[in-house]
Length: 100
Image (cartoon, rainbow, N blue to C red):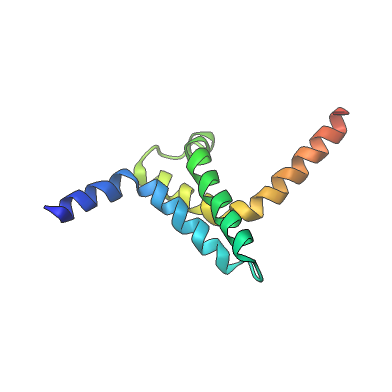
């Protein structure tokens, strides 16, 4: 009975788990981090995947199934720390051209 319950929980929260695992795996690319920096890297990756995965699936017209959402969650969790500086730079350039 417990195996069924565990399987149901994994199925329900699979995109959350995928985002968390992706953010943990991103630490393999980031070297010489303090504990605080590593915690922040995992937090940014995890929360980014949690809140932007559904948007990314719909924006790129991907199938709205669990596998697509899980894959996107994992990739966002994995790449979020690399994407944050790129997005920030893009926003700064946009603000400079608009005179903000």
